[in-house]
Amino acid sequence: MFPTAIAGSLPKPAWLAETQKLWPKWKCEGADLAQAKLDATLLWIKAQEDAGLDVIGDGEMSRQHFVHGFLPQVVAPLRLKGRVHAVEAQFLRAHTTRKIKFTLRGPMTIVDTVADRFYGDKVGLAFAFAALLNQEALALQADGVDIIQFDEPAFNVYTTDAADWGVKALERAAQGLHEAGQAAGRRCTTAVHICYGYGIAANIDWKQTLGPEWRQYAQVLPALAASSIDQVSLECIHSHVPAELMALLAGKDVMVGVIDVASDLIETAEEVADTIGRALQFVPRDRLIACTNCGLAPMSRAVAEAKLAALAQGAALARQRFG
Ligand SMILES: [Zn+2]
Image (cartoon, rainbow, N blue to C red; front, side, top):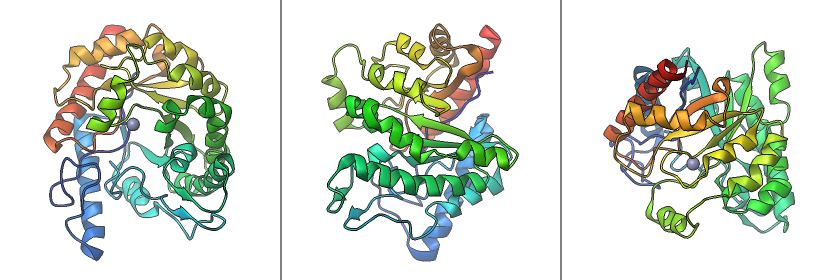
């Protein structure tokens, strides 16, 4: 009950990249950089295991920013030159026996950040990216990834488009993953992470324009509830999202954000368990996963480590309280 996971990113160690920056410069290059990325991945695998998390990620140590991996200027029909994340996914699988989750950007969020000089049509471009994401996702499944999560913060910005075609593009990106998992003799779970972003100044300013109640999720959650995606990751703690919106996700696993990524204050186990308790009014016990609101990348390493521990301890307390 109440397994624990992070949304995705973790801070890069000071010897790998600049710290506490969203777009940090790497500290080395070439083969040294490739090795340093894997060394940092190994460090965070161990830190997540030591904290007691149930689902382990690579912390996105190999990406400068979460958008990296799929970030071109589009001038011709899209195709993949080869694998995008094979190295870090296979490395992650080789170094933990726990469930692993790997994150990819969702098609709508990709379209929001590329310069298109070819398709001239947002929806067509999103489905073209979805086909490529699907290729990589199927390969990640074959690498032994248990949960493939697509990050779609754009769903909270373009709420009408998200409900109209964003969820369908997402399903295209996840197409065949369940079947491929079954054929390989294990379940491959699909997830989407929708948030209000990192705790950086631009996001904090934007959030101040959203009013006292954030109801953006209300438009997209019904479309997700009707979709083939298994898990949905939402902000909860210290956010203005009305908790009852989670009821729109009947039938889905809900990754409830119980750790604030916009504050360096470390949550107590009681706070985390209280947040889980509030979510339990709208999410069944066997469908609740305790998670972070968003990635921890721009935070200090010490704060991130303390927050991982708070997440695990809070979920353990919630199991005692509500088990
Ligand atoms: Zn996020």
